[in-house]
Length: 517
Ligand code: GBH
Image (cartoon, rainbow, N blue to C red; front, side, top):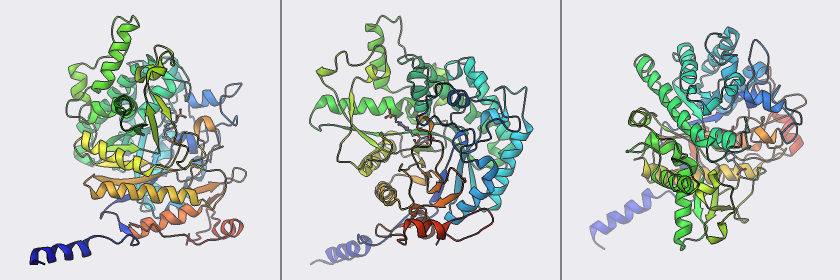
């Protein structure tokens, strides 16, 4: 053996972490938990708050919500926020990502009527978070649009670009001195496609093929305007970071030999998240090529005088391009996709699904969560992070949401398995040079899961909806250990207590500072 090969062998032996050793996260890696105002706050009409499109939707008769529930009370975080901060202290999280309710601050949507009580609530919340040694991470908009603005067309009306920037200014003016991390808008695709292009979210417009694309342009411009505003007026003094959270699924061709499936998966990724990410993060800006091409051709065939995808002017492109200090990625799952001749006439025209012209299928062998759309596919998460890093030249990535839904029960081994496999996949991507800087669990506690009401539980803490008490699930102990050690131990199992013993022992209330472990 030569000296060089000895050296190589030594290097190999010492550098490769044995499989059963905990895998460290990079120094300074940030862990957090995420929530959203409508899903947790309750107090829907207290202290001068106006109505949002989710108040309108959940109060409809008959109710479109699976269990006919509302967010009127939700988990009452409006009143119990101090307690929620207590449990975050127990977890040891570095940051708390929560959202601000637009109609709590501007009950009529516009800035002529500013609700001081609403602003005060977030003053108290933020001060308490900071006092607990936790970093506040604010989402300015997580889907609860003031109802008044929806009557004017909401995100389909181009004026919303200014309405949103006016609202963002109020929020920055008040909190920029205390909040170092900002998300302007949570999940443009879910706002635009699910709310305007289909009926899966408020305002349930279901005008596919048109409305989601009008919305997409306005959301991008609104985001960019809020980003530029921070740049111009606040960055010098407060030096915070501002980004956007984009929901990203991975799409895998159902066969890896069929060219059509490979192209279909590529198209699906670009329609799902490229539509929003490409204008902001790519070198060229503008909408992705695949999306422009498909919609342009379909529109022409369908007799539209021009593409249903609105154009971004050169000025729009330059405003949007680069308008994010990091890539906020919400990611949960992967889908298989295929495309063949049997698709002819399968989707209504025009429609978003017809524009993609492919079929999404589930692999029944992948572990299935309580939510029908959610399966555990860690290699898909790895491929997604790698692809985003490659396409957009290795931006800093914050995983702003990742989580698993279950039914009731504190012994949530499945959720722990999901976290272990997804965090391991993320570490693989980090090892290969992806700049993932932060990771946040959806969600701190069970909450109002949109159209599914309270039937799907995403919490590290279970909420008893009779008493509103929060109880740590087994996954809370697991996450606490990850954060404490800044490493992932795939073999770590939190103490195995019985369901009853676990809940009795770990019960936490606001005036009881029980340690988690
Ligand atoms: C997040 O969205 C939200 O930001 C958060 O508020 C929410 O509570 C959390 O997820 C859990 O759902 O396949 O037609 O059934 C995640 C985005 C939502 C995208 C569900 C895919 C499934 C549509 N995902 N959606 S469908």
